[in-house]
Length: 149
Image (cartoon, rainbow, N blue to C red; front, top):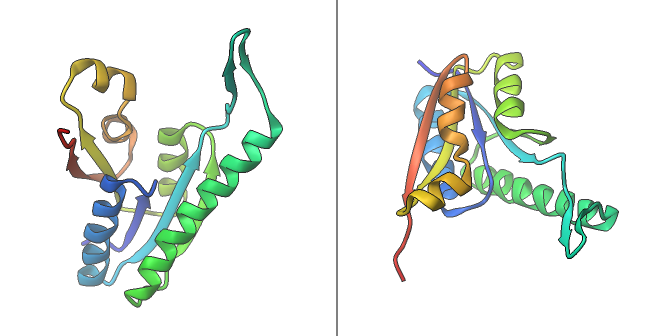
């Protein structure tokens, strides 16, 4: 059924849930598995005069995204998977769909967190909905609910 699976991974709770579900799918389908972390290309820091570009911030963020990806790869390796992984830079939906298309993926897995308020949903700019609209293949959204304090 699914022979090539791409997991868009960010290390969040919903990303961890997606990793677990993706692991199960890959196991049962004997699928090839790729892990992606997508770092935004426009990294800037807000200041009182507006946004400014700080090269050190970009380097720290690149290291953070690499660490998230490496953690996901390590977890999958502990389960016995041979998995490829890559940090991509750019707009997440565009990068994920392009990678999936060029690598012949027939499933994209992404974590999604339900947010309670409309403002939180609007502000977060959910990637999962946009992936469904733009992907050439099936998209599986693994849900994590917002926890009330």
